[in-house]
Image (tube, rainbow, N blue to C red; front, top):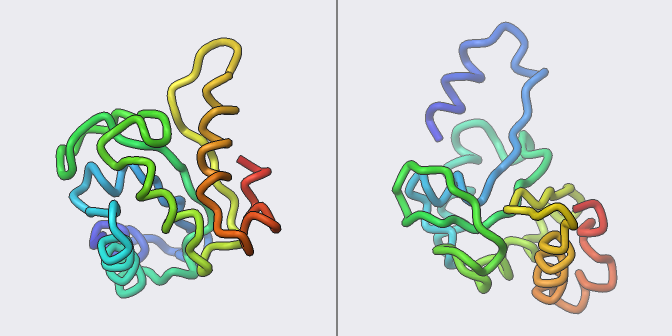
Length: 139
């Protein structure tokens, strides 16, 4: 995530920047976000480089490619190499409870995949979060 720090340092008005975390991009970049420990390690690095307060949104998607592949190929939630269970700690992370997420997954014309992916994410919410729907209604 040092490239983000370089971008922030290289612009005249860094206060105009923000970060949207993309789960497939993190995974393809080599961050093993499949476990809570891996997720937290990635976020600790982000916090040290630009700060977690810079995160304003999420792209939620699985990855068709292996960790560290550096290839951006999105899959539906649980249909890729990240796996369904990884999204449990991601959608329940209290640091981001008020931030919006966007499903950036493959879609057909009728968009039924969005309904299915959203149902999967909502099923992973812990009871406290499920009651508030953790802003997943914005996805």
